Length: 422
Image (cartoon, rainbow, N blue to C red; front, side, top):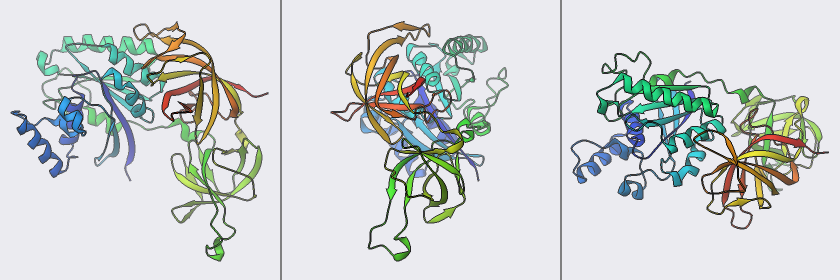
């Protein structure tokens, strides 16, 4: 069975990101014949001499008409070595919120840079998002190198600039690759046009990237999404059935494990794990299962089942980094909903500390956060949450801020200083 890699792509406007993704899918034979026929037809209608592979991912009509990527487009493809879920993110600054969405679960972020322009403000923003979301790996493809006759000196200059910015933002695993998305150089196959580059192609890097997800080694963290209790009309053998459905966000669950239910603190033992009608002896991170416990405990949606030997503390406040995604500014005193796992609680912003300067990587003082700002705030929760440090657990240190009246998402949050309740 091949392993699954989640990747996201991002880049400034006109850096050729959609073309790169289209080339990656086309050269890896991951485009269906009817899809390619449609792309060819639209290309002919536009009077283009060659097939515009960017159309493979620009699926919305408004995207095709404007020639830009607006929404996050998810694509699924596979090679003999690995299966991929690709989130193609927009490049325009007003769609940065979509880049945050696409990168939040990625194992690797592929960022494009036009070799003629080098690092742009939006490139810095994408790299900052990768740093804040702690995306494990970042590949920067230096694109359109064919327009500079595959100049090694020009590539090395941009690569140094990229690594300098990465160091400023605290990104550790950054790899640069010279490519021509239009021609396909170093996208799927290594190119003879860059004899001075002895590294692998983009696809080779993606296929061989080691996946060592730290959260799989953490203790069990299982937010309850639904309590399953069959009605009285169910078959007799299900009359006493009670299970708790959800998705394992960290660690593993095994029959016989001692667990604690938060926030009540009640303890019990796992006596069964069910998946689509099949009984399992154990389940692992990212699996959606139903867990049965030995004791009849009052458990509801929003509660969390955790490993007894490493019960996390409940938190009534936190300092966190926010990627602000709303048109309405955030200020000290703002009241919001915090959605952590399957639980939502009221919260107040006790302080807006500052926002990130994308040129220097420094946090500068600020009283408000506006659309696409990345800043630091402190929050106080109306009810305690089992919130963890994002550096330790991406899943359990992440949360959303929601407008309680409109129901819209305001920000993606990453906790980095959490205070236990008294």
